[in-house]
Length: 114
Ligand SMILES: *[C@@H]1O[C@H](CO)[C@@H](O)[C@H](O)[C@H]1NC(C)=O
Ligand SMILES: *[C@@H]1O[C@H](CO)[C@@H](O)[C@H](O)[C@H]1NC(C)=O
Image 1 (cartoon, helix red, strand yellow):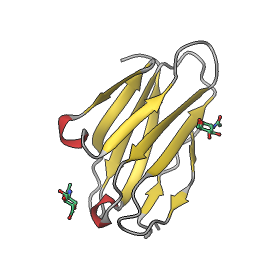
Image 2 (tube, helix red, strand yellow):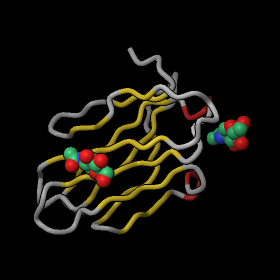
Image 3 (cartoon, helix red, strand yellow):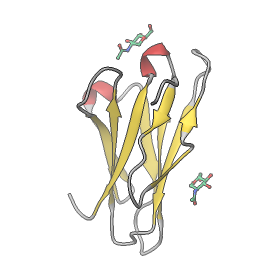
Image 4 (cartoon, helix red, strand yellow):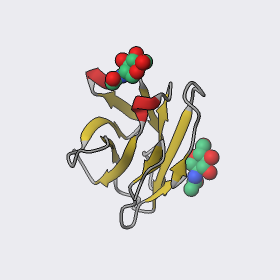
């Protein structure tokens, strides 16, 4: 279903935008957003599912305003957002240098606590 360079998996109750991103290799930055209305969910996790695989790899997560990246993804991604406070949540995953091998489905997940 997803044959684009980058695209999202859609999860119930969590909105990810844009749904699909086409980018030319070497076109540098791609930023994906994830937002939801669960005001007491202070954790947002980002996963990557690469083509031909069914498992998802954790890229990193945001806890309140604090990002934690998996070591192997540190150079290629940034996670940011402000999850503190009792407001709707909006976080983002930045693909710092989109390349052919960035082609994947990116999932975000929201959770109450760690
Ligand atoms: C999330 O934040 C980004 C960047 O600050 C903004 O462009 C986007 O509109 C926000 N989305 C929502 C649903 O607030
Ligand atoms: C993706 O490709 C770039 C350039 O060819 C390379 O430097 C990088 O290590 C590759 N990343 C992975 C995860 O294979």
